[in-house]
Amino acid sequence: MPATLTPARLRAERLAAQGVGAPGATPAAVVARMTAVQGQDLGQVLWAIGVRAPGSTRADVRAAFDRGEVVRACPMRGTLHALRPDDLRLIASLTAERTIRSIARRATELGIDDALVTRARDATVDALHGGRSLVRDDLFDHWRAVGIDPAGGRGYHLLLRLALDGLVVWGPTARVGQGIVLLDEWAPATEDLPDRDEALRRVVTGHLRGRGPVTEADTAAWTKLPLGDVRRGAAAAGDAIERLGDGLLALADRPAPGGVPTGHLLPGFDEYLLGYADRSAQLPVAHQDRVVPGGNGVFLPMAVVRGVVAGTWTRAERSTGIRLVVTPFEPLDPAAVRALEAAAERYAHWLAAPVTFDVAPPA
Image (tube, rainbow, N blue to C red; front, top):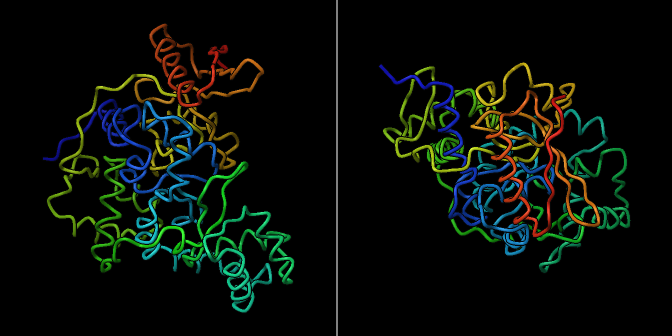
């Protein structure tokens, strides 16, 4: 009979798979192991990578984007993720067409047809070819100059469509945000796309490598692939996947849990929650509204102790540095406070800025 994991063991295994607090990885290696990292907020995803590469700095993570080792794009769920350019191409080969179909109705409501998409594509190539990059607002100005109005959500939708088509990605970091570049110029493909079964195998095992143990439903929710495709990818992986109790799947050669700090300050939208359909092992149901207030889709930064989300945290910039305040859900014991204070010190190193740490009364 397959082994059933206790909740504590499941959390420990997931932290190990995610590499949270595990030393030795570069930012690019972190992203490669995770396959894709939720990245709709640039500041948050920079730290999501940094917390998985202890000893790195924010400048190190930005440099990985500036070298083209990592890009941001929309391979799944119509949401920006950070990932290797070749992993983007791999995932998009399975998901892009489905996502384009899912947003077709909204495109019609915005007055976007194939002719307008073609005009936007031509204008974008004209603006960016030769290795140039433009931040979004500057690219929209170029569109306006050729008669394409990005107002009312049309600009965002057209840019999403061009990203799904594999034309553009968010590449080098800018003073504010990232420059948009032509994918094939900025980061030419270094790997051929495999057949569908092999692509499914790589994506399913990639999800397991960075988040396992997971259920098939977790992988389907993360990729937005049908359950049948997830099962097909798992079957293609064969003995590389171990089947545990409660419908959980894990890689047979996954890392052993342990050897990392007990306290972590994770960003908002972190894969420690976003990587799963069922997040109850990490975040007690009673506190889920505290992390996603009102169910508005905005995930707050999380204070994690022994694998459990124990509160949220905020940061405020001051002339003397950063003030970081943890607001716990329940009173924290002294060991938990010390663990989170150590996490704040790691965050200060990553920022290369002084950080003061405080714990507010439970809210």
